Image (cartoon, rainbow, N blue to C red; front, top):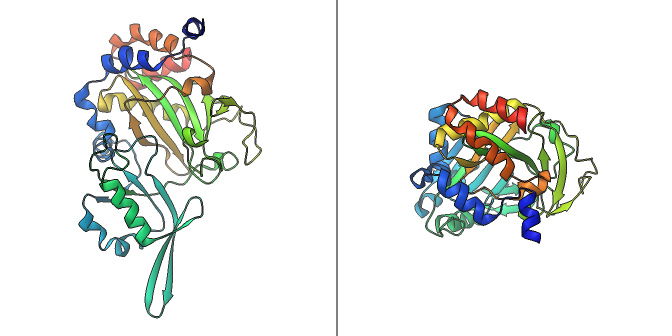
Length: 317
């Protein structure tokens, strides 16, 4: 009974997502362009798609020896594994603190949750990334030290600690569903739904939030700021959808998750891509993906430009 009801609601399940959409529409040879964030950044630069600047790429343990001499010159940064998933292994450093004592400089890193890390702790974390602790296949990995992005002021009352991001599901180049992930205290200031961040569904037609959940529970107000979650109008909405649509052309994966951040000065920029995007976006929108995905199929052969595909999505979803 439950399965029939879910099917009638158009809910996309894991098996159907993999068999009908991912395997059929995603070329295996193109996965590295999405799974490896270093390759994604190189590809995006070639396509003129803005991403956070990569300060350093740490590929081996030897590079850790003098790491403190390099990172102490940055005001802030983000550490992330090149082949990580679900936000695992990502640390946001919002402030570098230098303490002088007896002619010796001590470098401390303040995280987005205000916890302090000794430089040796930072090195230890990067060492874990290199060992493959957070990688998709558990194999040795590369660490990226990246510029920290400031959040758009629209989110000042809707985010605790960290930076919200926008997830857009793109099918054959057409945005089909979206949500904004809002950090909370329980998510440790991270936009990670598994850790307790808010997922707020977004109307593709106008960029306005329509529903919000925390771990599958519908919520009306942000638990930390008290602000109402439905009715938030996101700026740069069409630009965000066009950016998501262009990512299909960039990596040629038919079923794709595009993560975007809104910045105060540059508008929407690409954060990362996901070839196996999760299904919680349906709960955030109280809507199933299947009817939207199937509505795109007749359109896929028309070879429209990204802006034309966005026109279709905004008119229909």
